[in-house]
Length: 205
Image (cartoon, rainbow, N blue to C red; front, side, top):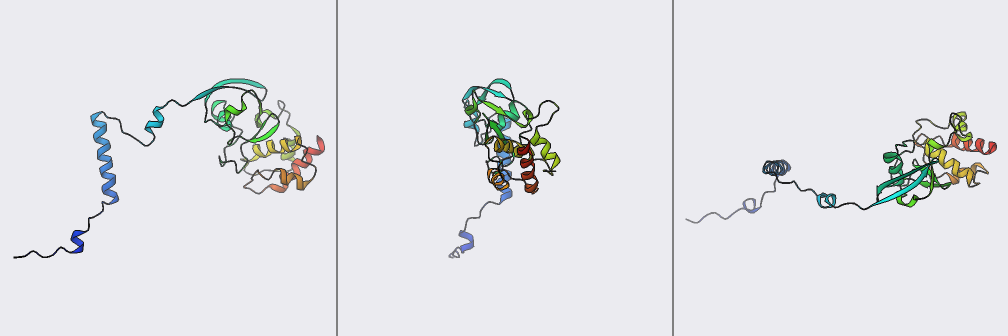
């Protein structure tokens, strides 16, 4: 007798299902754990290497700090994670929203795009260093007077950008203010009131 020819269905190799893959992975991981062997991940090799660090000395809001940081640390993370100055907000973390705006030597920068090692020996001002004790800066007071915020998340960055705008002499008109602060996003849409707040502060400066 001759055997029947194999049908295409018989010759096609069945692909493993998602459930089979997950079950197999779990079983392998469990076996490694029982045997006392390390479970390798994609980042194991990189994590085992010592990341390069640098000692940074920076003056923040008038206080001098010296600390050792990973060379990849951003100024934003230096402020928030190392110095616990959480007034500076992490928004997009890509330099597109301005929530992390601070002043470095009086100039506006995005904290998320600035490496901490780049501010060694420089002066940084954050929202925590704007008021004088209980006395608010005129721009802070103007934000209150003009009701220039809703959720308040972007407000620290807006104020720091406004201070930079004033210091750069770019608050001469509403159009100039809008252009100078175009990198700061307010998801609540308080732009007209923010402009009026900067105009009010400009009149008092």
